[in-house]
Length: 156
Image 1 (tube, rainbow, N blue to C red):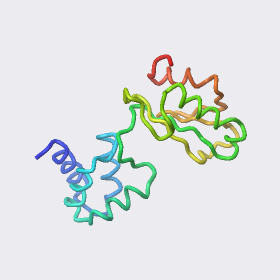
Image 2 (tube, helix red, strand yellow):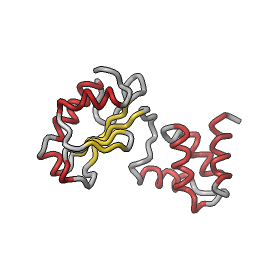
Image 3 (cartoon, rainbow, N blue to C red):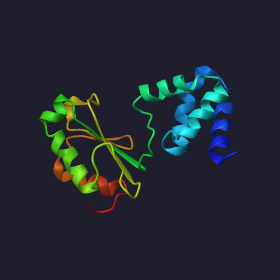
Image 4 (cartoon, one colour):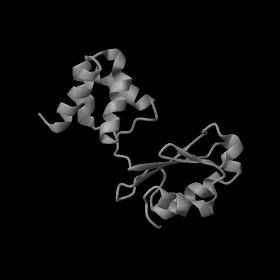
């Protein structure tokens, strides 16, 4: 039995192998691996007695789940209307330039994943960037380098 299989079995056991715990189980698996490995989904399906199609259906429905490894730090740039009007797009482009990745990608060193979101619900303080759950208001292009450094990305 691989380490992944054993770990996922432990996670499902912690939830009583209950189908109602599917989302919680997937959250715990993602927390353990920083993404949902394909092998883990098969184990979740088998252990919870849930069709694999349903496991994939839930995992693809929620944006919080990912099938590719994410960086140690996740930066989300809001591109909702208010943030966009206030310069959110140039902020996202500066992150891409500094991190040398496109939105949705992870840096080669595994430190950062960059994503954009349609709205964070903080319209009055936009553009807003969230890094590892830490909200930053009124972010401008000049702030990007400092944010990357602050969250462990070193100077870029």
